Image (cartoon, rainbow, N blue to C red):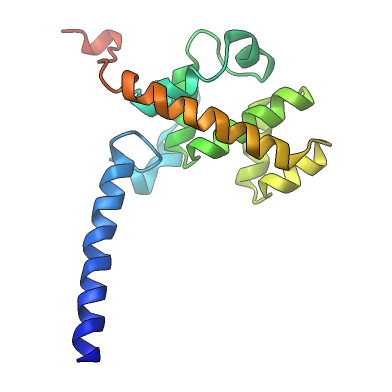
Length: 164
């Protein structure tokens, strides 16, 4: 009986894992068709497909903030899409952006530190920024991103090549 129960639990977990990966794929939370090759596939100067999550993240801050942290003010959604493809998550991007803004640093530099294995708390400490406050503020921004995601996901995003 215990063996059957364990088998059923394992089957349920495996079935649920597939749904979870599919849920992440739709809003662009880091898993995409290029998943195993994502970071290598994103080369400087290349355009990537915009996801609703990338557009929603780009709307979380104004152009002045994007400029100050070294993100393109012309197409911040492109930069967000690239970060998502490289494996960054929504809350992580928000936290790194807040840290860059408050410390007067560039977001790509902080993303590089993160890719080298530094924790978000260590990056905040190195910047003399209160990580707990950054985390709380990023949670508020994440809720705003989620609200705008509902609207953005209903809008078709066209690039020059994909116009009907």
